[in-house]
Amino acid sequence: MDWLANHTTDATLAARLRTEASAALAARKADDPTFVTGVSHVQWPIGSLLFGNVSGYLAGRKSSAQASTGSFDAQGVLHYPQPGEDPKYGTTHFTDHANGHGARKLASILEAAQLTGNAALISTALRLLDQQTALYADTVPAAPRPGRSPSTPRTFSPRRGS
Image (cartoon, rainbow, N blue to C red; front, side):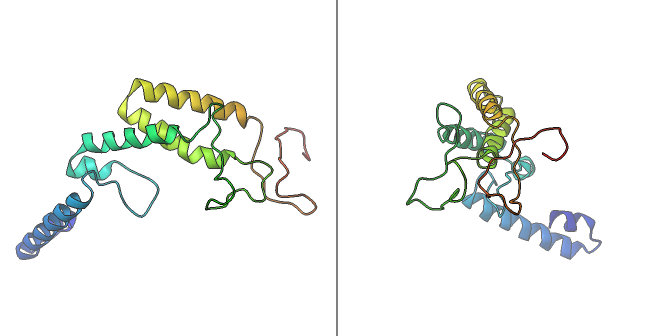
């Protein structure tokens, strides 16, 4: 609405747009002071950069990342929820973890470490990255093929036909 207000030639409409935009931002800020909630799992800092509270945004990202690091075990594995818990990930998988499951959470931790510059979080994030890299080295996710179980691991080989 701010963009529209800045690009309209109608002064009355511009004033109305600015008033409504201010009211909407005030209501949103009361509900979400760092402007991070939304429809997506992606948490761009653009709301905080444009409308304020960058320090609150960074503190929230740091806190969330620190909590997420506790989801990984000592070997850097993020296990699927255990039987009886929902959602029931990995019911057809050969183990209780997978690179895609850990990667999404790890990417968020790495991003928060980069954004905040927190030395302890950077160290933990890089340790988890090293562990995940070692754990899933030379593996690639593959769609099930005829005659092949969807839970059979596939390793990458540069040889043709593998």
